[in-house]
Image 1 (cartoon, helix red, strand yellow):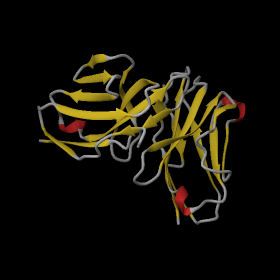
Image 2 (cartoon, one colour; image 1 turned 45 degrees about the vertical axis):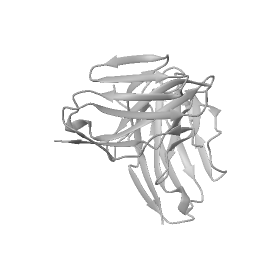
Image 3 (cartoon, one colour; image 1 turned 60 degrees about the vertical axis):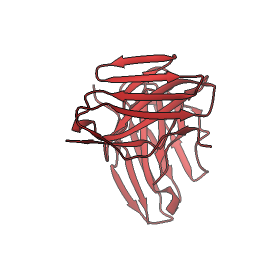
Image 4 (cartoon, chains in turn purple, red; image 1 turned 120 degrees about the horizontal axis):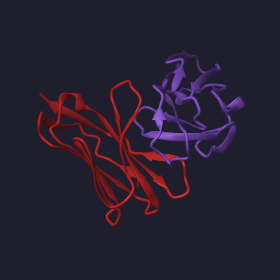
Length: 114
Length: 111
């Protein structure tokens, strides 16, 4: 079984540019989560999809962040325009049921905004 | 007060000894508790989950939960150099699907 796949693994962009991160969950997993770790802080929840629907987006920091999951398969997280404080590691996770934790994480995308 | 608190470490433990990692949480509504292991530059990997008071053992790992005192711990017996990593404590609240992480404890097993 393939794991959760994220790309790119690294991205360096200039402030004001746009970046799109992609996550391919484990096949058949309806639940997809985005988390983020900013330097020196704990990993924090961004949002949760069940299939193509946003179940909880309470962690999205502001309207510069847009997440989509068309067709309930892969998901994208777009940051537009990027700010310096958006730098960090963005993790995606998926689970088959709504397990309230205990899911499989992808290897993350390290985003650096300069 | 942080929702999930962990000592950042590093915690240095000799090889073969028991490593003890602790975590406290602030919300009494928390229902599920997890320990993730994260090697440098890698993704968090779930190693233990615990849902009720007491101990839960899985191989060399034992998770302990005390809801009255609002703490959860992870014991690693016969520590190996490969156990050197950051250990993340995470909790989940009733009716919620997201988990709340602590900052993690860096564990260093000394050969």
